[in-house]
Amino acid sequence: MSVRPIALGFLLALLVGLSGEAFAAERVGQILRIKGSCEVESEGQRRPLQTASPVHLLDVVKTGANARLVVELDDGTVLTLGENAELKIDEFVFNKPGIADRLKLFAGGAFRFTTGRLIKTDDSIIEIQTRVPALGLRGTDFWAGPLDGNYSVLVFDGALDVSNNGQSVILDEAGEGTNIADGGSPGPVTRWPQEKVQRALDTVRF
Image (cartoon, rainbow, N blue to C red; front, side):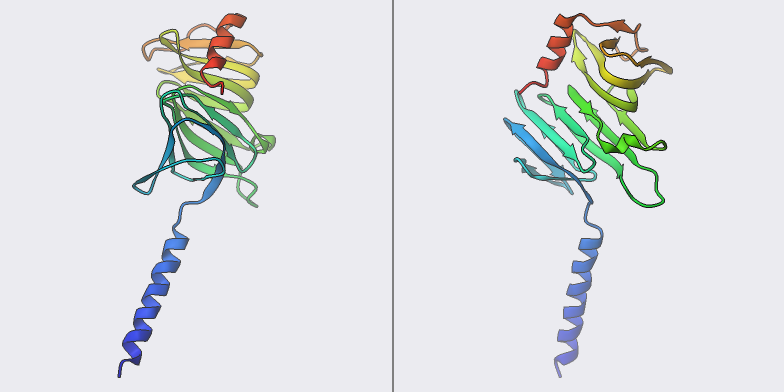
């Protein structure tokens, strides 16, 4: 009789399908705005991005030459990427009972970051790793990326801990910035002139 093999085959197919859903990457946000050529690497595959495309945990989002991209996470955090930049969300925990809110990500290239509701809780943690410094946030709107031969960071609101090479500085007043040359320690905290602020913002402007 052929009933058992068919039933067994159906059961295996069902289990495989359920397993795939169970282990599917968690959705953490979406593409809010896009300009130029942008793509995502997900589970070993590449595909082009468009407005409203979902962003999942461990996806690697990339922008091409002269491209721009805005990603909105599910708590309202917004990241704007400049050209030849990339973003990977390594951990995102938001509004889950008994678990502290947490965001850990990697950002390469020029980007602007504005926190959403995630930072509103006292025990929330936001950690950003770049190709040069590590950044720790406390309710922040800031820009970071290559500028004038350095890796630079500029804060617009809140406070930001910038760490590299075993040293760190804190930016906690609007308009303060620091520069890191050749992978060294963060330089002195200074108030940037408007001309420099404008050039930084131009790297992520649509």
